[in-house]
Image (cartoon, rainbow, N blue to C red):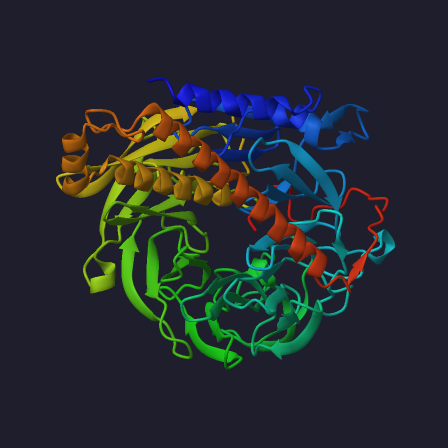
Length: 591
């Protein structure tokens, strides 16, 4: 019986109604895939890196830049952040020759739009419940038409433009973070490195509701949120002295011009002394506040966190929200694991993972962490810009108070080889898990390649092996992209088919005996009890009808949401004339 080709033929007829000239409907379906964002555009691979599905070259995405000295024109994308909305598009902030949010189709990898936004967009976050993307811009400029530090986009209507949101004076700028989450649909939080204030924003009116001044800090940045206890974890930045004997930074003040500051933390507190604030003070004696834990319910600080060696750190929350990991300025000696507690209570240290990347005081040795849930294992992989190995940590027993077993996995055959990652201000080394697969990706900025690890078990314990290097793939960000909405429909369809097949093959003893006694045959089954061609064909067409119905329902819901949405803050988007911003933190900033 050849019934399923008939079904495929039906699909072909349906697709035949689409005009051949419509380019979109004849593109390869790429989802799921690993997207690698680099200076030369976007590379889209299969899960193990063996197949390059698509390359979007920089000249097709990013505007040209002309060198003032040579007059030569080139294309180089400058990505600052990436999120996927899980159903329609992938969104990325881009500061190449202007300030844009670039939008790409999630299924076909096609460039959908370049949406102008406030100057120097960086941090980007997505709220699936509200179908909104929130963008934090680091250098808003009134002369370019900017009125705020934060811009908001609807994922269901690209042409809908909402008012920008100012968090403090527009002249106040600097690195900052914006956080939106489905567990707090009406509230968004933002901060900047230049002011000691946490801003609470009404997600509906797009207005600042409250300003919470945080004591002792010069500013706030690098902010994470756990939906487990509804707490925000943010690094508190401070001021430090420099340029004289006995100062926090010694005789040198580093990059930039120092000013007169008040040092209110650490052992060298003083007023109106030569010094710096913010990033320059990371890892200095004054950097003692660490990660502040702030309760979104009671609106106050419930705890401060340093790593086990007493160093301040950047916060990292795992995807489940169960663990806070402190990425400290200890050179990458260790990773302190903190278990998020109950709402209103400070989270407590659970374990310390010895990573051993380096012992360079003041340096942030651990750059990124990947969490993998595979079969019965929970795994964390720590990566560093200072080493050619990663640390695989088995976190499985942590929830029951057990130990964390670790293993060093090398990314190069020669353990003495030069580190394949860049290091220092602006350098990154990212890791990304191809969700549901055994493959983990580690990029290498210096050699412009990606190392692929394959996870497995050995003697009942998780381990990993490098299976290949993917060459000629410059990377700034990596993201595993999947159309969750389509995946859910396919899962429902598969479940329905399985249920119908089981139902049609089951035959009660009474029906069987009656059929045998009367000599009657059934249209639904053959003599052997196997479903007939008619039955299977009917099932296939039923499933196709189900898929069409679900698809139409989803599109109807999206349209209804758009028509019923609050458009009070909407306005016609005008594309301002953009000047190339001065990247004060380099185009590959360690943000």
